[in-house]
Image 1 (tube, one colour):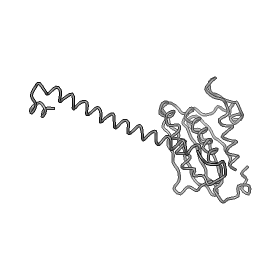
Image 2 (cartoon, one colour; image 1 turned 135 degrees about the vertical axis):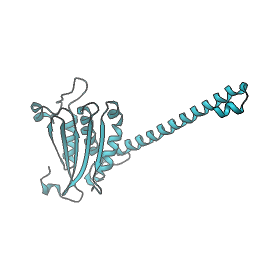
Image 3 (tube, one colour; image 1 turned 180 degrees about the horizontal axis):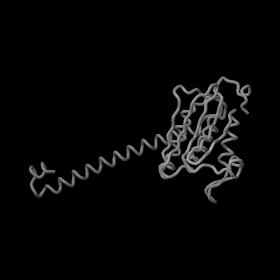
Image 4 (cartoon, one colour; image 1 turned 30 degrees about the vertical axis):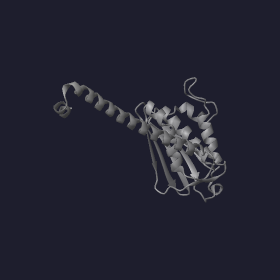
Length: 215
């Protein structure tokens, strides 16, 4: 601006400054549009991956790491608005599981969505996927108040919810457990104040779940 003031006549200086300001605003607006377009593209990609769009409902090799990433992307707006920090950690070379990808993604959605609801404001949700022998184990953890002792026996019952009226149907955990069983896995949890963990165990592709006690 000092350089413009030195080289331009006073009668044209105001026009030049206005033009420079407009150009800066246009560039900032274009950058924001590009960033928004990239976010939309990422979200559409996540939605397609989450729903297994254009894929037949058949058992296939399922990439757990990809499913968890797509699910967290779908829930990003909710976690940001609370706010809650959601972190995903997947083991290197995590093996696939043989199952229905869309149903497994709904398991992740129900568990992570519940964890965000349960976590304290400004708190954390951790999603960790590892291999344990012939199984892939996914743990969804939150730092909320925990599940009261008197509710734990009913936590998977259809229509049971501790959320206020209108904020929960009581079907999320029931659906998560049903879909886990559909994919030859099991689902359990542990809870104490400040640390609740829901654990999904799924047989690695190529193993025989019935021979290892998975129902």
